[in-house]
Amino acid sequence: MAIAKLPRQILPNLYRFAPNRDTLGGTAYLLITGEGNVLIDCPAWHEDNEAWLGEQGPVRWLCLTHRDGHGPKVKTIQEKLGCQVVVQEQEAYLLPGARICRFREQLAIAPFLTAIWTPGYSPGSSCYYWGENGGILFTGRHLLPDGEGNLRAIKQAKTFHWPRQQASVEKIHRYLDEKDMPLRAVCPGEMWVICGEKIGA
Image 1 (cartoon, helix red, strand yellow):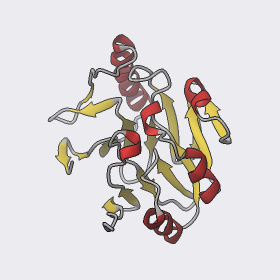
Image 2: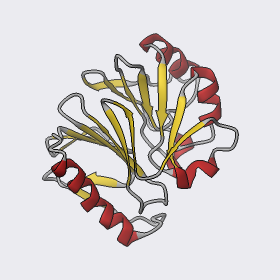
Image 3: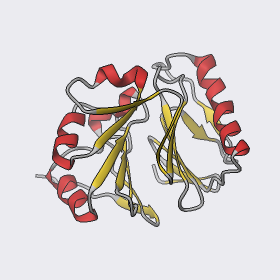
Image 4: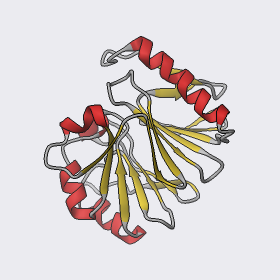
C-alpha cells in the first residue's frame, strides 16, 4: 500500500494538500486560525488526512470554491469533522444531505475570512479572501495569476460563462482596491503563487 502524501506548509498557518483525484486533481488548503480551522475545498479523504487534520485542531468551516472542488465526500467530511459547509447558493443543490451555509454575493465567515461570489467557471464559483499572512486569495479553478502576479481568467472546456468569468476578475480587483486589501499570495486549485512567482505544481 502506498504511503499518502501529507499536507505541506506553504506559509505560516497555511497548508496545501496533495491533488485530489475525486476533484479532478484539485488542491485543497487548510488555514489554522484561533477561531477554528478552515478547509478550502475537499482534500482526498483517507485515514492519513483525517488523522492529520485531527492533530491540527478542530475544523470549523469547509469552504467550497466551485462545483468541481466539492467531490463526493463533502457529507462524510462534515460528519467526521463536525464542520459547517459554506457554498454559494447556486451550487447548494449539488450537496444533498449536507448542512450548508449558503450565501449570495458576499459572506463574512469570520472577521478574517470573506466569501465572494465570482461566477464564470461555474455558476457558483467563489473566491475566499483571508486577511492573515499579508492577504491570501483562494480562487479554485476560476482565477489564476499571470507571471507578473495579475489575476487572469482562464477559459477551459468546462467554463460555464466566459464573459461572466472575465467580469469576475474585475470584481475581485474592485473588492481588493475599494477595501484597500493587501494581497501577498493567490492560492488557486492547482498551484500557489507568492509575489507573482509560481511555486510548486
